[in-house]
Image (cartoon, rainbow, N blue to C red; front, side):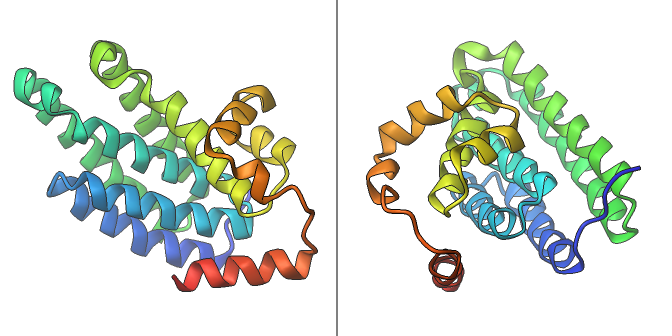
Length: 194
């Protein structure tokens, strides 16, 4: 049986998914990146793996949309891909409204698969978008105070891959001093207000 989501997470994800759908229709890569970051904040607080994958999907879509070469030279394939993802997002929203978490997970996997297949077809342009997104978003979650091990386990990536990204971003220098749970919570509240 699939674990249910907290009600507040469901409500936030529904609002965010509707915004993601709009940004996808407008091919607004910047807004998709912003929505991905918002979803990371939500997922970090509640440690909700499905929200993390929605953030990864959203970030991956922003990277694909930002690649003008794909849109210009492979317009038909690109449009078919966007249409398919949009239909899957509609289904994901419907299943989330019904609180059918098993179907929610199926739709997330379906969208991830579509991105992976599209990336495989246009790999020279997209450069393994999903793997990159997992590591990048993992570093963001780590920034919110979760342990490296926890983040790596949630995303199904190695600590070494994550450490490399954390090293690039110098997040480790900011988080060397362990923060109390209270301080981490206050920091997250402050981030959410921004």
